[in-house]
Image 1: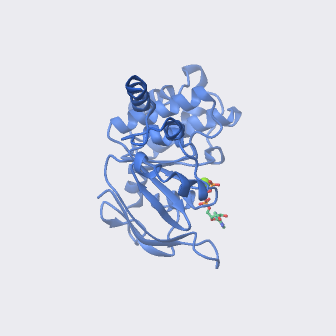
Image 2: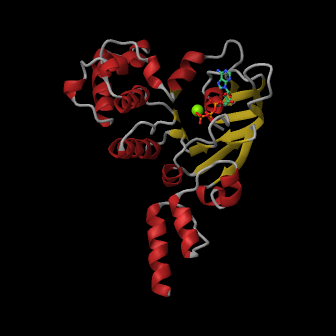
Image 3: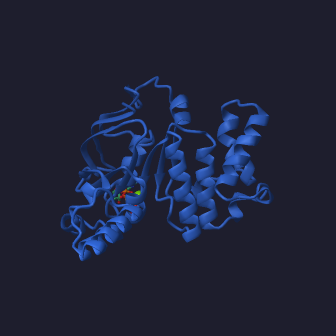
Amino acid sequence: MLVNLKDISVKYSHDEDVLNKINLNIEKGEFIGIAGRSGSGKTTLLETIGGMRKPNSGHVFFYNEDIYQENYDTLNFRRKLQIVFQFPENLFFEQDIFSEAAYGLRMSNMQQNDIRSRVSVGLESVGFGKDDFQKSPFTLSGGQKRRLALACALVMQPEILLLDEPFSGLDTEGINLVSDILYREHKKGTTIILVSHNPNILSELCSRILIVSNHSIAFDGTPAQVYNNTDSLKKIGVMIPDVKIFSQLLGINHLENLTYEYFLKKTLQFISEK
Ligand SMILES: Nc1ncnc2c1ncn2[C@@H]1O[C@H](COP(=O)(O)OP(=O)(O)OP(=O)(O)O)[C@@H](O)[C@H]1O
Ligand SMILES: [Mg+2]
């Protein structure tokens, strides 16, 4: 088991729990999407899994070791698990893009040449050219800052990548670029947990969807299984993928998955049978 949450509860003050007694298993190689209305606790859940927020009760295990126990090898954990935060721009501190992306590798005592090639590949994969490398991170647009934050995580070649709303503030080109990167990373074997409000992206990329509502995980299954609960999801403020809405309008009820490609095949089959 890669990650195991055992009865975790989290609260911020003396108020009620934001997350209440959550149990969750995550296997290596999964691509998990997390959705839920604003304020439901998605970021809190991601931060708890990522070692950033100690739960008030319960345990988070990474390879069967409690990540919040005393003497846990946090440095090793930080290398294997990378988080791209919802507002990553607040975390930049280096003078130029290249140094920002190289920071994590420098801390791990890697050879200069290896750092240089890994960082160049990482920055280019998120759409930066060599001319950009010396620019200040603070002069970048919101979308460019998000892509830089993703590169900072990717160069570490993590086993598990956690992303909090990585598409917000991106234009269509940026969304496609980041989606492609995540698709490829997953194919390489990286486990991914992706928080997003966009149900189309989630159902296209993810093999498993978690819906956070009412302090717990209200739904957990494949995109087809989870988004089949259309009425309940609408009631708790969760958006439904276009593919699901279109298929319901057409009267196609059984979909094995919710990717556009599969939907188009099903639709053509449906029309030809009419
Ligand atoms: N640092 C904090 N101090 C106090 N309360 C907080 C803090 N961070 C979050 N909360 C509260 O915890 C709840 C869950 O917040 P969280 O940010 O995890 O939700 P979210 O699902 O990520 O929301 P969004 O979709 O808007 O990003 C909210 O009620 C929020 O007000
Ligand atoms: Mg959030």
